Length: 198
Length: 198
DNA sequence: GGAAATAATACGACCGGTTGTCTCATATTG
DNA sequence: CAATATGAGACAACCGGTCGTATTATTTCC
Image (tube, rainbow over all chains, first blue to last red; front, side, top):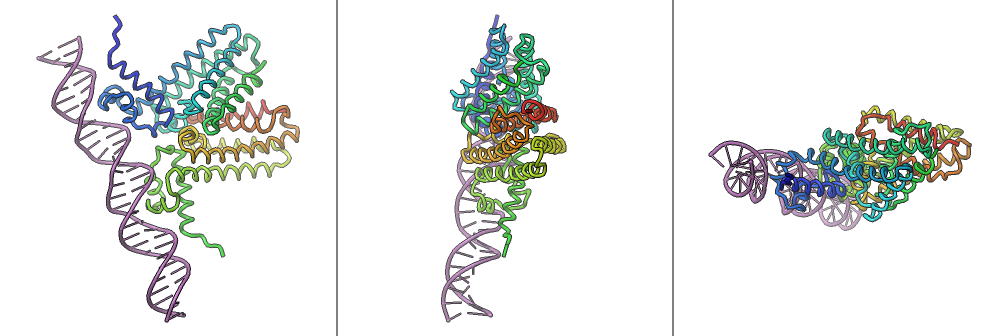
């Protein structure tokens, strides 16, 4: 029998709201009260669930990356014969979503790497794990594209995946202050459409 | 006659300390008291000088970028005949400094773009201006390198400068959580040493 | 030129509000 | 009934910002 306790639901709601608010306002810019009020859960419960704000932040990071992993995995499986195309379509989908959100927020990982990436050990480890999981998946796609002959083989898939992640993160920062998707499009065009091409 | 008022000295000290602390702890993670105590200036004076924390933040951003503009300008003028080499040497110097700081802090512009780039209008404008000034200078160097035949001409110097800035910012974020200069070195190697090459 | 009046700046105690954390009585559950 | 989960509130520390007063500069007048 599968039972879903209230505790699990509350935790899930808190994590979802945490993703939203931490992305919009940052870690130090978001108070626990704001998160708790939004989902109507008292403070005492929060500390029962998570123990501390820092611990909560680390869990929010993992909670945030999950859908992206799923989405990218789906794209790679869907377009089995064209891994490069799958990556391009995946990123275009991401760009469309960011445009719909009026370029607000950007990426929680990038924002938190900058804000607390070197001050909170716990969150640093969580960020490492999340970024690496994402990077590994990109690497997988690029390696497949190499086998398919659409991506150059004189560079390692790992290095290209790292470069792609980093340029994408930087483009997201530029997007936030320029309120434009041009940096994101340029990132895809220059890397996927040029530099990585076989 | 040139007189330097106490007010100017105090402002300068506050801006310097602001750069240090905002880079280490972020905007919302740094209280005014902490800055004020460090330079022994009372709170009232602060509000005489800057009016608000947000305004102060915007000025700190401009104060931060100044030395980088100067340094990059110097490198470009020094190696007049080899603009690409000048850029490479400039970035290598930056990497050395970041290593010396144990990869803490990173770049104030990147950190603040992520944290408050889309929540504070004032700081957003200041960030735009600072990033653009820096980008324009890189563009100048790349255009010169194009004339000298060391950098490809089928891409505009502006696009390459944007890409370089974005990838560098992303690499700085990765650096912070990996505690390693590898992402920075890879950024220079892949772009200046490969993708941009004529 | 020196004294008095006026303007400008420096200052830190203080404001209301919020922070993250913790306690403990009550409710719920096995 | 014992054990755990819950939730309202207490808590001290801290936040950005204000304000009346004290100090210093500058101007005006005799």
